[in-house]
Image 1 (cartoon, rainbow, N blue to C red):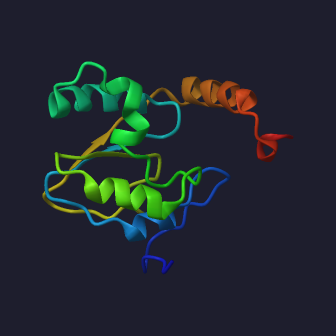
Image 2: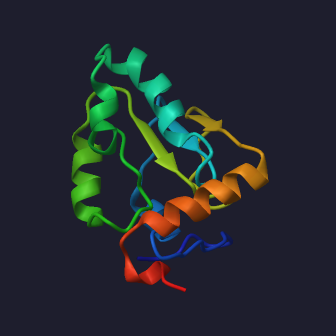
Image 3: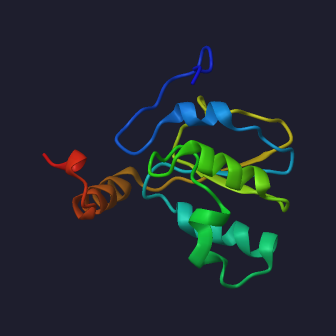
Length: 136
């Protein structure tokens, strides 16, 4: 994947910001941008309800509103699912705005949390993930 010139690379055990290179932003897209453990799922649910009029949307957020930069799913699968969406899309990302593709017509919702709370929550969350990459 080519890197976006002049943009910072954010690469971690779960995220790869280069995956955004394969995303074409639609003018009516909403992108929820939050650091880890700062309310992404809550904000996605708030956005999802009026988009879908489906009260069960929260149970399918990972399918209906993809997390582009997570490396748990192959990018072709994510890209195909995202491209097939005919309704207004909501995407999520922990990647800072200096790396995301920006479109003047799309909407970006940035949500933050008190840093100490986010840090403690993130550490507890990582401790519960059964992946060897998080072992100390």
